[in-house]
Each structure stands twice: as structure tokens, then as C-alpha cells.
Length: 194
Image 1 (cartoon, rainbow, N blue to C red):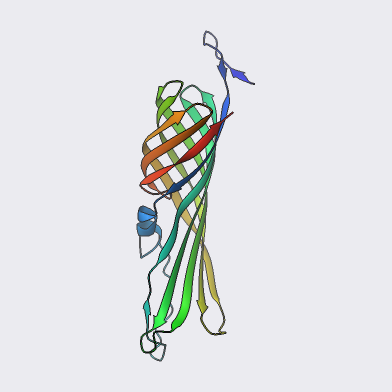
Image 2 (cartoon, one colour):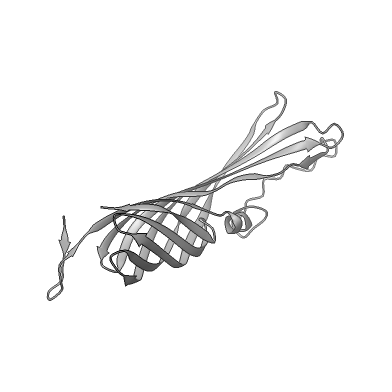
């Protein structure tokens, strides 16, 4: 137990928090894929003799994130977030409808985080937060037959702004956030304070 105090201030016990949560990929999809502001185009060069294909239904993992924060004042936390998002898209031959290739994209981000709260009760906390960092994006295209796998990777700038977040509970708690960035517009999960 560590107590942080300034002259004339009540002692404050430093707290640590671990969180795991899931967010939507709507904004991340718009920013980092599909020619968004931070997207890297991965389209192959135009080949007039290439196989004619169409894309199948895309599957996404959502954004899965692990957060660690250290509460240094009653209203102030510092920490870090590690987030992952994955996408899988099959492509089919237009003539035979056979699987032509599979495309996989993986995003792994690390972001330092700051959080400030404006309502602090024993079981309820209302807060806002900001995180900014970097991500590695790995793109992989695998042909259905025994052809070679095409892999590319690049770095990306990532962020998360939480306009409104709240947690309910004491040691073990549930939380939900409304914001914008790598973790999406809506993000929620469970956490543990110690």
C-alpha cells in the first residue's frame, strides 16, 4: 500500500486496475481499412489476366482490449492498453464459385492511457479518457491452392477518446464506454481493482 499526499492533503492509497473488454469495429474499419484516413492500400497491381473474383461475407473479431491503469489521485489514472482486432474475408471465383483465396488482417495496438473521473462513489465512477499510440497491421492473402502466401505489415497511428465512461462495482466491476477510436464507439467489459 502506497500513500500519495501533498502538504495539507488527505492521504490517498494508490490503486491498480486490470480490465478486459470488447468493442465494436465500426470506426476502426472506417479509419484503418477501406481507404480510411490511416489506411494502407493492399490491393494487388492490376493484372488483366488475373482470376475474376468476388468477395464473400467478411467476419470480424471486434476489438478485444486489455487495460492496466494506476490510480494516483482520487480523480486521475495513468496506464496502458493493448488491443487486437482481426478481419477475415474469403474471395470466390465468379465462374465456378470455388474459394479463390482468403484475406486476413490483424491489428495489434499499444496505447498509453490517461483517465480522469468527475464522479467518484464507492460503487459508481463516471470518467473520460484518452489514449494515443501505435499499431502493427499485418495483411495476409492466402490462395486456396498451393500458391504462395502474400504478407505485408505496416505501422499505424492509433487513438481512443472516451467521452463518457462509467463503472459499477467495487473490487470486481462492470464498465461501459462511449467514445471513438481503435476500441470503437461502444466498449465494455469487466475489471478488477487491487
